[in-house]
Length: 541
Image 1 (cartoon, rainbow, N blue to C red):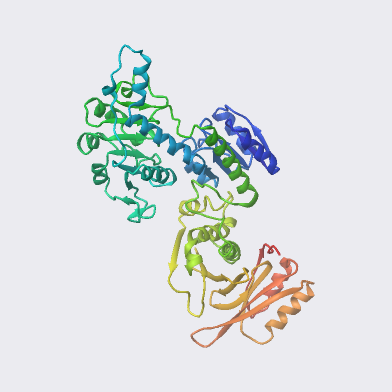
Image 2: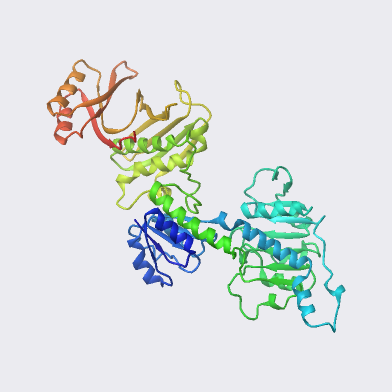
């Protein structure tokens, strides 16, 4: 496998790829047509902010499976196009957490104590010594409002507590009333939050939900006059022109800005002439330590995904998690094997898929297990690649209903963590498989439709439904023997209809793959109703 590095990375990152045994090429400065021509030749792509991975670049992605952004923002990567093509997009948000949080504090300290202006004043010489002109404000005892309580936001908040400040948080995705062991109160309404803070610092992603979160109406009507604004997240979060006006008209006390709606900002940007405004050129993650860390972590993430399927720092995986604890990881294998069996049973068009989970481990990972099973079910029905990244997109595109149902109790007669998958087909039929993982960590089939069993799904499997009549089992054994196909394992189950008649299900595992002639011979027996052969990967012993 090969990795394309399309932006300049720290040497430590490239050295990691080399040590992993993978090949890589560094090709910096590629234009859109050039990058589009290169990506099909590589399984992995690592970029920073320079390379633009557009929909056109991903139109024919070839072997490309994963893109890693060495940094936080993924504005230069077309996420919908990546997802539709089944390409995982990763970033390295954790790597620059400390550097970005420290930079926010550098802005705040400079702003509160008017350091840039005071420095310039001293440099004019001893003729003037106007100390009172640069009188600042003390941070201890002030209330700081942290917008966005992710890694960076909580790091900023922790340091604010050390400064003996009162800390409030705003984050629509945090459901608890407090964070950081109750030391930071979460306010639900942004305007109420804004009215209480002396300092506001932003640590949120860009996008429609955060654009101009601090707008003209709020700056001019809902802020304290002593408010200090820190933006170290995305330029669009704050209305820059309204902010400049608010500073000039004394509606707020100051602003420290590291990010801009357009970078670099135009030469006549109004913030350049606004009073008490500290400006830096997007330096949040610009430390030697952070630059090395984002490069190394981006390369580590790409290699991990390509080698083992481990997902680190996913941006477009919608909550999927494959690096599970040891007691949960076997359910990943179970979900895949259930999906493979159902793909063999359901040969007509898929109408809907319902995944149910009961028990702590299946409910906790239901989204991941649903995608894994669904990808295996749908794969034979698509000519384009189907994987956990694009499976929900493809299902929606084809009008396939995908339903996930957490259940408080397992199905009747079963105990423990149960994963159930039902597939409805276009011809009105449906098939359901229930499975679990025992204490030995091995996947087990417990029910197929209404037939109970206990079998490890692996290898060559033949599923035979027949009328429950004497002689069928003997005929099946003889037929396999005549074809020189050895039966390695077999379970038999019965189901009674309301009129008292019974059908039976035989699930066999064979040492070799049955031939088409063997399957035809089985179906020729009048009491045999259905025969399906499915190949499931062997387990790692």
